[in-house]
Image (cartoon, helix red, strand yellow):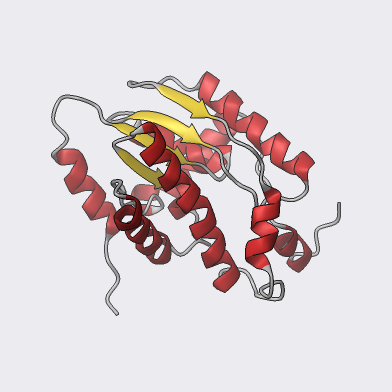
Amino acid sequence: MQKINYQKQLDKIIENLGDKAPSLLLHSCCAPCSSYCIEYLSQYFNITVFYYNPNIYPETEYEKRKAEQKRLISEMKTKYSVKMLDCDFESEKFYEMAKGLENCRECGERCFKCYRLRLEKTAQETKKYNYDYFTTTLTISPLKNAQKINEIGNELSKEYGVQWLPSDFKKKEGYKRSIELSKVHNLYRQNYCGCVFSKTELKIEE
């Protein structure tokens, strides 16, 4: 199946936005990945960063990444406003979702379900607070399946009646720029995706 260029879709949407900046709920997996996304999207949208990541293990790691996200938002200079929407950790929802998939390797079915878990919560909050669009920073990672993420986003868009903003943030050297911005802001860059399974697979000690 031919891959869709989601960056081109995003470019087209941006070209047709007009003068008023729409509201965007941006799901963020971490501060480093969000850095380029915020820099880029805040030229066109009023952004609310939604840090919902029940997959992260242990909870101390979750809190550390969350604190870095808050610090980054406070430090970045942007054209349009950027704020943060807080939420509960809800780690039990991740483990419930992962039942039977504990031995899946990274980038497999467990990861796809994890994308959906986080994006569904984002879609629900988009509907609840009436944001114009929702999207995620996940597509910036070379290790994440941007086609699958956008497929899930489009499905949830129809299910919840909210507008998905397509993306492939690794395009236009977005990932490279995120590394540069991480250095500028001295951001903590984690050495595993987040969940206990990815940590175990990479043999990272506590």
